[in-house]
Length: 358
Image (tube, rainbow, N blue to C red):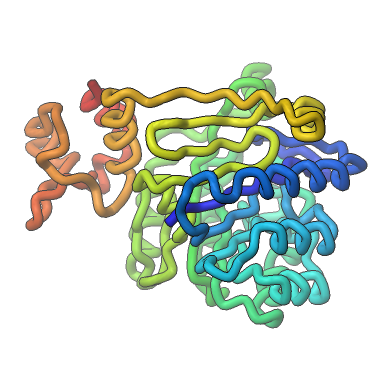
């Protein structure tokens, strides 16, 4: 079983923190969709396995006209797909649009809320407000969506623990099935990082960030959510099937500019350049880069991805010395001989993973 990812890079405006490939050239959406359709037609059988999950990410997929989204879905063919997710900006939600998404086969939405605090939303450059976020969720539920995920962010500048707790409680009142939560990252080249380097904002300190994460984990656990990956929480049975493929080594095909694919030992990626992608597809000369993973690469990726999940890894598959981490309470051995990170270990997970790599 394989996954299919479609990268829709268009945004009406850029968020301060974003380092994904995106563009505000909305006038190029039509020709980009034409190129994507041609790439889908050429590559949909590349994994030599049925496509079971489809994910439209970005950028902002909800900037596409519903007709273009429908054309993409029809080109793929969704008869064998179990989960079809699309990312949605709350500012794009209308009852008519959401009903249309449901009608063309989208059965899961990932709504980019980030916060229910207007001050924080304005600071990070989101184009929706808290009221729109709440309304978008209600409209999605009214349109028939029964599998909803939202994104939340913590460790934002000026964000207090009280604000973060309020966001968590608001989320839990919304009858949603999945929550993805991310600590703010200062990525190279982003507007956010420039503001930090210019002394125009003060990052949240590490202790406060860790405390926010711990509060999140504790509260969602009491609410019945399964903490199945470092940043992801779901009601039982509502884990993201598509994203889980990235963590367990299942093949996936990436369509669109900057999209990555993974099949067998080969990882490949399209150019993260709109002109190069559209021209390459049009002329039949797309320059897709690739690398063949060695045994060492595969092992290191298994360590890096497996230890992020609640399932962890079989003890026998880990070559490094895990005993010091078990003694310190950072890793633990399960009854079925698997190694998983503890709550304390998650805070130091990058260091642990680096130490266990070869």
